[in-house]
Image 1 (cartoon, rainbow over the protein chains, first blue to last red):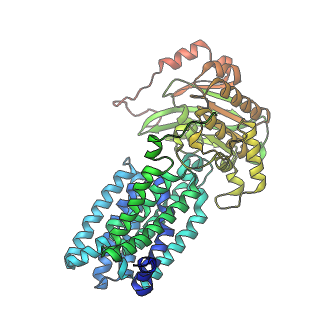
Image 2: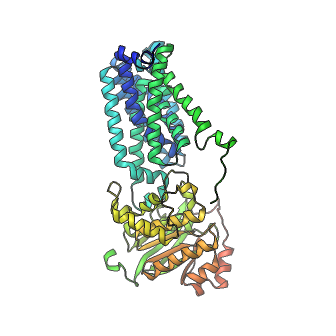
Image 3: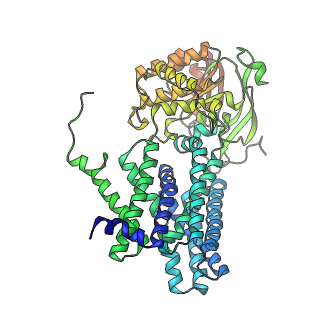
Length: 290
Length: 254
């Protein structure tokens, strides 16, 4: 088998592989930076919670459209995810409940409703699609949708970058200078949900956060500079997407999980070999004079 | 109103009218009234739980008064606030220069371009706090004292008329404290109004002409030597931290 057969032939031969790769590229560009900000805000697990919260909306979209229409499910998921994010945020601001506690309550309710709705009419196959995604079945319409979400994410992030950094780093300062922190928090949550909806189509509700959090964790292991971290996160997400797709093609594995496992392999390597990783601990470099 | 008092050394920078700030209906600051003269240098002193930080948070609008009101002569844009370091995410991947540049917020805004002048000012501010050459250092690698210097540099860039410092010298060594106190004195000399929450009574007596002594309620507010009289300090100490679950409704609030 030549290198061409190994790395390029699957893409040259099959349109669905090319579409899947473009989807991965878009998701990497959007989800990578979003994941880094989620991690910086100590909301890593909240992203996971939100990805489950998308489910009932997607399920209703599926019931209404009568088939696995990605657009209908995407719109439903967006409404459900945003509702849960905003309601949970509002409840934690209005009551003494911490944000993680109110998120947990809302997403569990949302997840249960979602599974109930899917089981009302769907088959087990549909449920599997919803849970694990269908990256190889992405059509042009879905691809456009993902592309639009990525573009919106990148433009919005570049606009709200400074207040978002201030809000993560020193929320008290932002409040003191009248910087409308909650507004940027909500704008950020909207971006999180948008990207979850995009990756939900490819990776399913269970692994939608995979391309957000694993690259973000890798980035944090390699760099202590935010712009560099954003680039590393997107880069590793993209490489994981490509290698995962190729591996899943040759080894005849499910694509979504293979992509996430590839990212997990990079994460494992990073744990050992990154500047702040384990290898440094066991093979320390000599210290400096000052 | 802010225009009339800008830069003036007399007149109130801030008036508190029967201010009560409460957590879950339990008052942390209770019926506090008084005025803060523009251009004054005031220490807020009192035992733990006296409501010192709560008062600052109410002044910057972070906490809403349960009763009473606060009258500002300065607009929020003219107020610089240094919260307790514990409220800041020190693990955030941001470098020293970018942290100081946040002080330019009122000029550059949330979306505006960072001007070359702001960058120059930020470097000058770092020089003023003794951190020249630290521009690219991530804040996570700084000591507590160095980090506090960074926050002072950010305040320098903010160019505020009213500066509120919440325990600025806690866990800071003598030399850093000395350097930062010099900056506080410089602000005072420039006619800015400075308020600092402090624990060290010697520091208060040596460096702060005015003192607000509270123990939830006002004990004294005026010239430091009068307010910090032994009788007042005793009174402040006697009003220990308390949270009375069986407390009745405050008569003036009913």
